[in-house]
Image (cartoon, rainbow, N blue to C red; front, side, top):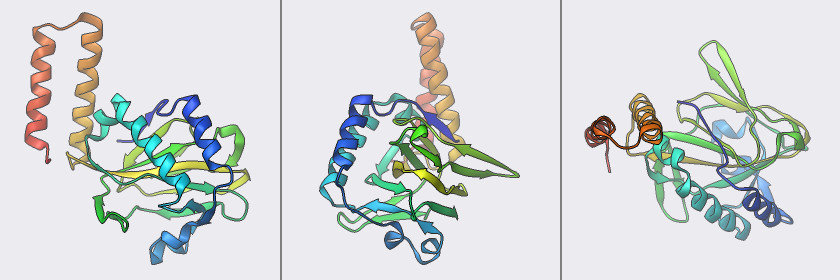
Length: 227
């Protein structure tokens, strides 16, 4: 399931994040890549434990906690601490790759199975040219370039790349989620059922049918969930 999450960050939060990023020190993104990815990864990142990164990480995690579709779609068990990258100038692309199955945070020892990948856009599309997140889907490609504050989530198994940025800077926050429900098709089914229940309750209020469907949702979650 590839899903667009709207308005994860508010305009005020985005403004604060951009203020934090002013004067931040960037390092080569390939320094944190594996041997294979290092040959195709050409961007910049904030140091994992730098002051600006810690500040932004806390803001992003708080925003995710309040976003109902994020929880419904990912059913998070663990979230790898968010990081921030920048594409532009001579460091402006990331070639085709599939994210590592396990991510390790050396400062905390946290290991996260990357069931779901997420990119949260921090720069408006008008601020840069190129920089689309491109998914390879069978024989077609899907190009994604979202408004600042919006996010895209997608299975960690997805082949994807970032197109070269030819003007300006593409800023984004990225992280991975280990879900309580490991299988993508089951997560999608639960998400669709949950959203349908929400819409039914909004339209008609609670009744015996919405209660029964809610019970079905939780019974499926009980069978498939690993906490």
